[in-house]
Image 1 (cartoon, rainbow, N blue to C red):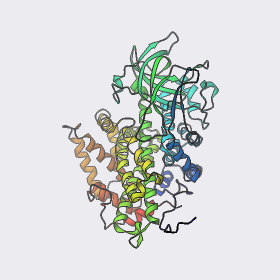
Image 2: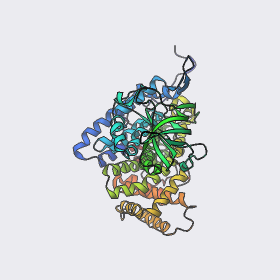
Image 3: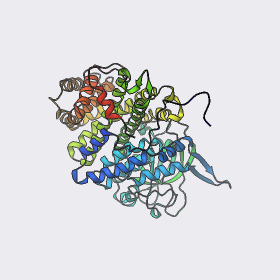
Image 4: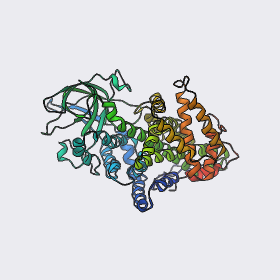
Length: 544
């Protein structure tokens, strides 16, 4: 029955029933740039199918349900037997299954696998970011397991499978499997060398018994886990299966689930090992070296995931302001709001261009590209994840009071936005890792300079920024205290070089003027007003 006191007008239609992939011009152009012509139609079709699913009302509802119904820990069954299981809402399983079937753990087995997976992961994050954690860790476990060819042969086909099998049973009986990780402990955090979990060798070669505690164990419902523990030869990587070969449960005692700010649909646990069976991965004492590619893969996923959150926030803000009338016309047409939206769109596009470029480097696999990844992945992880939270908050403000209401979806993005900056090493860890690469691996700096140098001469502000960066590199005095400033500049120069080479001129012009030329304030919405901001907003508009 209609209300007699008022009629509802000037309301924005829901952003639903659209293709999240094809509506993102920065993403589609990046895929076209990095995927060969013989494969491009297949990849576009695959990503468009995922994009249509992500933009559907049904999957958006699943995302909301998974977020509103967090996982529950069940330590014992009704008879008092220890079971250590986590119960999830059915929507969580549907989303995770869809992600697996879409190939979001299969990058290592397909041509252009990392680019198509990164693009898919960026799209899928926009539905509900919580199920991205097991997808990311399963994907990243593959290079670590390859340190042991026998383990890789056993597990890799299951980890890269497109079959989601949620039942806990021996790996040999499963068509698909998921992996989690347990690295950090209370006393160490990111300093994993401070771990005290002990590993005692057993009679069978390569097998151990673990005793200890992990402060963060992600995705505890998984089939297997990579963990670090102190073996007689030093810190070592181990594979801990959830179910042993004979069908019995391994000792995997879940103490509690973390009550987190965001990422509510995903389970993060504290776990005790007490005589837990494990298989060594790699050599004793070389645990950090064994997991280093795994860490790089998850760090890139942090940047990709943040780029996904940024894109969804921008899409919602532009959509709202396009349809919302205020002060005599659409909000998006007002000069000040246009400035805000253009600034947000610019940040999102730069993030997308950067993460897809790094995924392409992974696909290439050449020496030059591997060297670039060594310095560019921690820099991208540092900068893109740091920019995510302020961007999402500003996008929520574009909706006014509506953006503060749960039904808008923006509060969920706001709560999620700081996560990737903390996950897999917070900002200082990334900055120090870049310094380590600069000091120990001269090929990494050379690869970076070659990459940005290919855009030299195209924009005087980019040229000046590269020159300034070289000056920073030459002055190593007190460089650790300047590390954040250096890494921020490194990431901006890399983004600028990509946009100058590949983005429309109006996008590159605004980026170089604001991010490299200094014509920008401390808040979003302070771009130089004389540039073509309307084109940036229109480019970012999702078509529904």
